[in-house]
Length: 184
Image (cartoon, rainbow, N blue to C red; front, top):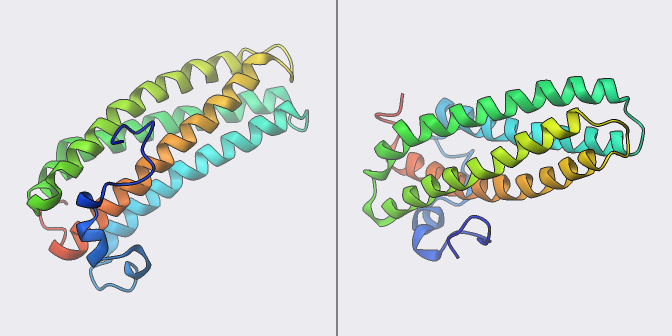
C-alpha cells in the first residue's frame, strides 16, 4: 500500500501533523511564508506542464495541432519538465528531507516514503523520455507513437499527482509546526 503505483493516500500514521494542520488552513497560517509558497508553486508548475503536454498531444491526435508545432512545444516543455523535476527531487533528497525528517520522529518514515517515490518516478520519467522521443519522430497525426505518448502522460500524471499531494501533506504541516529553519 506504500508503493506509489498502488497508493491512494498516506497511511494514518503519517498524517498526524496533517490532522493538526489541515490543507484548508494552510494559507491562513502565519508560517505560510515564501518558502512554502515557492515550493507549492514548483509543484503547480509540474502539474501545468503535464496538463499542457497532455492537451497538445490530444490536439495533435485530433489533427488540431500541426506536427511541427507539436514537436517544437513537446521538445521544449518535455525537456524543461524532466530537468526541473530531477533538480527539484535532488534538492529535496539531499537537503530538505534530511532536515525535515529530524523535526518530528512521528513522521520520519514519511521521508523514506517520499525518497522511494522519487526512485519510482525515475522509472516513469525514463518511460516519458522514451515515449516522447518516439512521438517526436512520428510520421503523422495518427502515428501510434503519439498515442503511446498520450497514454504515458496519463500514467505519469497520476503517479506524479499522487506523489505531490502526499509530499505536500507531509512537508507543509512540518514547516507550519516547526518553521523553516535550516532549509534555506
